[in-house]
Amino acid sequence: MALRDGGVRGPRFGLATDPDQATDLARELGFPVVVKPPAGSGSIGVRLCADAAAVATATRYLLETDPARLAIPAPGAVLVEEFLSGAEFSVETFDDQVVAVVRKRLGPHPHFVETGHDFPAGVSTAEHDDLAATALAALRALGLGWGAAHVELRSTDAGAALIEVNPRLAGGMIPRMLQEALGVDLIERQVARAAGQDKAPRPSAEVAASIRFLVAETAGTLRGVDGVDRAQRVPGVVEAGPIRPAGFEVVLSNSFQDRLGYVIATADDPAAAVLAADAGLAELRPLIDSGVLAGEGARA
Image (tube, rainbow, N blue to C red):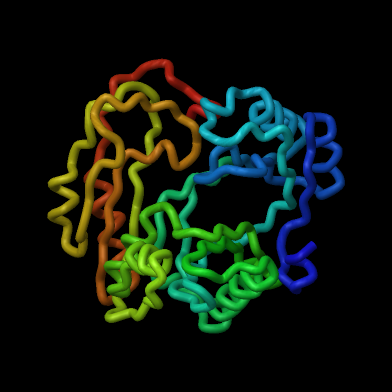
């Protein structure tokens, strides 16, 4: 395997085409494990499973649910991965340059919904360098390194471990957050590179920035997001708004699809940016006419 040959550490894993095969593989890897589709984004269908019953349920859900409803390619199989404990990060790169190491905030298990991001990541220099070096090593091992890439990792007791490599710009509004923090428009740089212009990211500033997402907890019809104006008045908040339009049918999927609004905040001090983003988020409230549009894991 290219990553292993390149000395990049990651979780042990295997493919399974039915629940029995998935549970056998999980027992071999050791519980808990992560069950997820081989292709997709935004944590769709990703679940932490503590026992065989949970593995079988998660596998059946992915293999038997209409792919159009999941908004992912028909899987045909599931990935069963060793669960690596530790904080999660993304390393945003451009060519062979590390632009930023970003701390990822996740909702509660058994799901992996991204609820926000912080820059800088708030780690030691050694941990930062380990995450950055592991991301670049993964890109080299896979023969990547043109333009933007979004590499996700966990920082474990044994060091940085690769979760996935995405040879594209980050989602989750990370480029927008980094534009505020660094003065670098990664989207513009990527378009320029595709047009044949040699425009590597050159930060013109560096402040701290955080983004938070308003995540739905109730299914139904969205009438709007209340409190955007109040969130925008919170000191440090530079942008806040809805993600989904009025009339959107909220179906709880325990993925990025549950995001309804957002807040971006900046400050000279990372802790102040975090506090401002959290305070702005506290002002947002979804207005939902409750229905019965529950997906794979309606929240308790």
